Image (cartoon, rainbow, N blue to C red; front, top):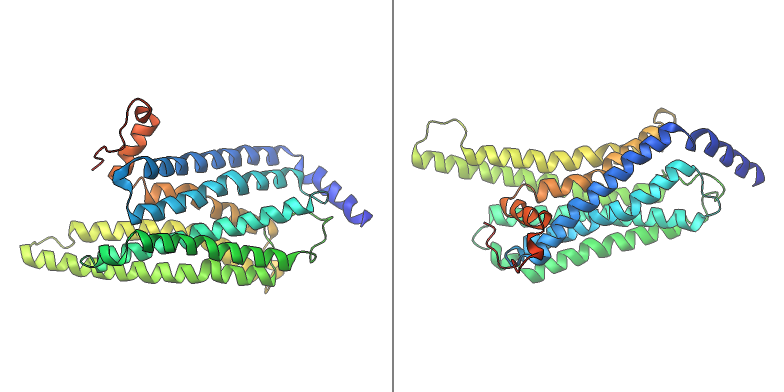
Length: 314
C-alpha cells in the first residue's frame, strides 16, 4: 500500500503538475460554464414563459437539468482529477464522482430518447398526438428518465466498491463488467431506439413531401419539407452519435483488446461525450424560433423589467 501511494504521488508530480494539465483545465472550466449557461437559458425559458408549457418542452426542460448538472458537478470533479492524478485520501469522493457521472449522462441520453418518441408521434401521428402525448405522459417519461439512471448508477457503484485499490489514481472511466453492462442500458439500447425512431420519421417525412409535390405538381426534385427533415435528422442523430459512440465503443473493446486502446484516448473520448451536454441546447432549443426569442429577452434582462410571461414567442 505504501508503495502504491508513492507511485501515485510520483504520477501526480509527473503528469498532474504540468502546463498541459492546467491548460486543459482552463478549457474544461470554459466548457463547464458554457454547459451551465446554455442549459440555464433553456430552464428559465420553459419555466417563465407560459407559451412554452407543453409536454415537448417539459422533456426539453428535463434534458436541460441533467445537462446542467453534468457541467456543474461532473466536469469540476473531473478537472480536479486531471490535476491531482490520484485521490487515495478521498476515495469516497472519487466514487461519488463516478456515481454522478453515470447517473447524469444516462439521464441525459434517456431524455433524448423520450424526445425522439415525442417527435415520432408529432410527425407520424399528428391527429392523435395531443391525446397520446399529454402532460401526464410527459411527466411519466421524465420520472423514468431519472429513476432508471439512479438505479443503474447506484447498483453499478455499489458493486464496484472494494474492487479498486483506493491508493491508485481515480480514473475517469472503469472498464469493468459493471461499466460494460451499464453502457448497454445507458447508451446502446437508447441509441438503437433513437436511430430507429428518427429513420421512421425520415421515411414518413419523405412520403409527406412527395404527396405535396404530386399535389402542387412541383418540378423541384426535393421539396423544402424533405430538405428540412434531412437536415434535422442529420443534426439530431449526428451530434448524439458523434459525441458518445467513440467512448462507449472504446470501453466495450477495452476489455477484449486491452493493449490497443490507450487510457488517454478513452478519456479524451469521454470528454467528447460530456461536450454533448453543451450541444444539446443548440440542437433542441436554439433550433426553434420561440426559444431564440426567449433567450434574447432573458439575456437582455427584459423579463426583469416587467411581466412578460404571457408574451407571444411565435
